[in-house]
Structures are given as structure tokens and as C-alpha cells.
Length: 175
Image 1 (spheres, rainbow, N blue to C red):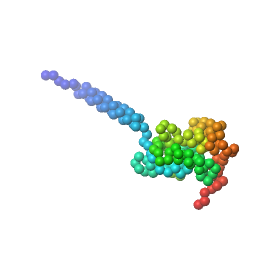
Image 2: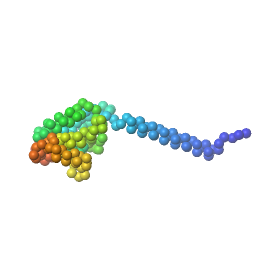
Image 3: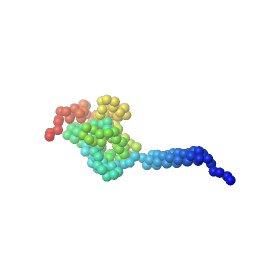
Image 4: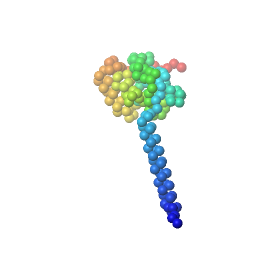
């Protein structure tokens, strides 16, 4: 009378089948995530040149501070132009948000992406923002700022624009 495979062989085949199933599911899941891309958020409000409020895919609002850049304040020279430039790029649009934690005010720190374009870098490149972060700033942003300065684009048309951090220290907010 023929017997089936030994218990040891059956265990090996079962383990191999489970492993192949797990690998297949994992590969398919990664493939579908890669194809779909990151989730997109809807920009609800542009507060100024470097701060927006977005609605995430679950419908929750998040205030986002654009990572690595600092734009003139609204009351500062070029502040309104900077804000209008950002609004023109992202206002009421869907953006991908790549976040890097939170700042001291509880805002999400992030880079905004539309159709493969880094909006943070574009703001610097067009002369609407300075590179923010003196300790290990993003080299792409540094190159973009340098090109904007040389090309005298945006705020660099002024002979000596005042950095927002310096402007804020000289014009503290009233309580």
C-alpha cells in the first residue's frame, strides 16, 4: 500500500508554500504602493510663503511649515509676493507631503510635491525664499538660492534683502 510523503517532507513543503505566499503578497503590496505613489493632500489655506494648511486623505487638517526654507513675513518687503507665489503653485491643489517631524509650534515640517516638482526648492530657485537651516542645509536648496542670487530673481532684485529671521527679531509680535 503506497504511503504519502513523510511528515518531515510535508512540513518542509508546507513551510516553502507559506514562504512563497508571503513573498508574493509582499511583492504585490510593494508594487501597488509604488504604482499608486504617496497619498495626496488638498491645500486648503496658504498662510504665507512657507506655511500652508492641508487636508489629509482622512479629512484631518494639518498646518505645514515648508521644510528648509524661510520666506519674508507678510509685513516685510517681498512678503506678499512670496505668499502669492506659493498660492499660485499650490492653492486648492492636491500635493504629496513628505514630512520630517514637527517644529516647536506643532506644525508638520514637510516638502510639498506636485507632479514630481519639489515646491520648496522652486520657491528658493525663483527668489521667494532663503534657505533655512544653518546646520547641514539641503545642498539642492543651497544651489537654488545661489542661482537665484546670481540671477537676481525675486527678492534678490533688492540690493540687500533682509533675512526673515533678522526681521522677526527686530519686529517681535505683539501679544
